[in-house]
Image (cartoon, rainbow, N blue to C red; front, side):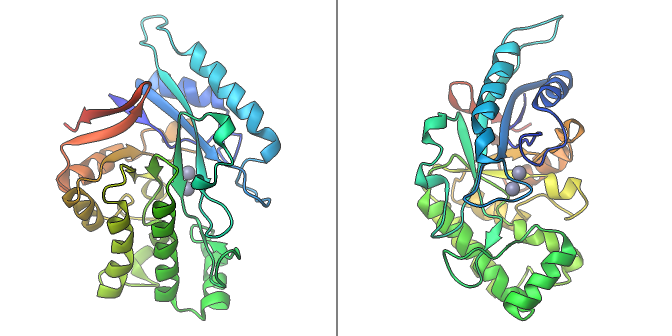
Amino acid sequence: MLTNHHTHCEFCDGQTSAHDMAEAARDAGFSILGFSSHAPLPFGTDWNMDGSRLGAYLATIRTLAAEHASPRAGIPAMGILVGLEIDFIEGLCGPADGRFREARLDYSIGSVHYVSPEGPPTVGFTVDEPEDDFAAHLESFYDGDADALVEDYYAAVAACVRAGGFDILGHLDLVRKNNGGKSRFREDTGRYRAAAMQVVDALAGTGIIVEVNTGGMARGKTDSPYPALWIAKELNARCIAVCVNSDAHQGNQLLANRDDGLRLAREAGYRKLTVVGMDGRRELPLE
Ligand SMILES: [Zn+2]
Ligand SMILES: [Zn+2]
């Protein structure tokens, strides 16, 4: 059963209309497609949805959900869920603050993109920004100390988890995106692992699903999905549920590197995936 809950379309920085994304998913045989546009932030960016478009987004996705709710021409029905990928910025905003409560979302993804090197609630820069910008910010905010940035990033993700208010944790170790070739920091040191383990420990017992996200790998930024295998093993040891999402920004990315995501989950010891279904959570065997 194919599902994807991490999907961007033209309401944020996706390059495909919601209509075309749904058609692509239907053609590919998906059973559940979740839309998760970048939720509006308290300030403007070129990748988040503008707050004025939230109503149109919700209406568009719900109309699509109705259109795809029944079989057509021999193709089974597809469930469509409306969600948001909501940024956590400590002291400023996050999934727990209830700004989108009235949207009555089917689910939400909690994600950290921003670090705040000058301390909350200031906004620094995004760890997944273009590499040249990232390098300049690492220098200007951290004097090039990537280990310090890593610690700030994971502290923010752990704070996001502790604050809660969402169903799925997005790309747990996104900070790896700008560490191609392990050029900026080592990922096998005690310091790195201790920072990441704060997140694993915070997740235990929360019921939050962690996504295995193949988006960075699909775009050539990492050589494995988020999170790294060793983190996935630690998650499994604590019975923390996982799903597999592609963070698609185009219709042809819905299945991108899905096999790598499934393989990582299996290698970590998982025997099932946990997804948000049309009527709450459901478990799917991981063949
Ligand atoms: Zn994201
Ligand atoms: Zn995303």
